[in-house]
Image (cartoon, rainbow, N blue to C red):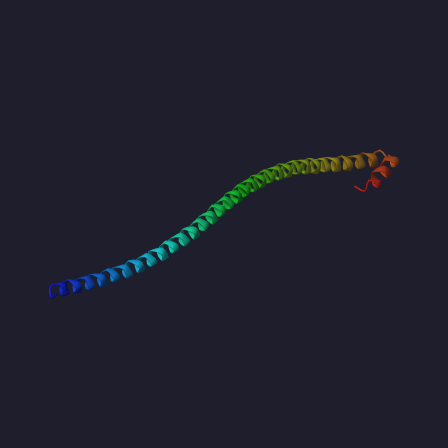
Length: 130
């Protein structure tokens, strides 16, 4: 009987150790499940953020393309307006030269009409108000 008592005592101790190990195992299992849930939640959030970043990058690419297109349109418009302005300046200079020449001709015609007493021509030139 004395020999059995220490063995029973050892069995009881082993059972307590097993129970403690089981409790620790279950705590670790619960903690592991919590960590796994946190990991899955974080991966889901990361996936959502990655999708958001992809969408943002796509939007940026679209806006950059639109900006490039608008810059090209703007440059073409500026070039067209520059050419139109140059053409208008040439026309203005032509008409200004024409006006100067025309004014000189009118002055000479007035002089000639006065010199030769061409009254009807003088009246016509006076009506031009030049």
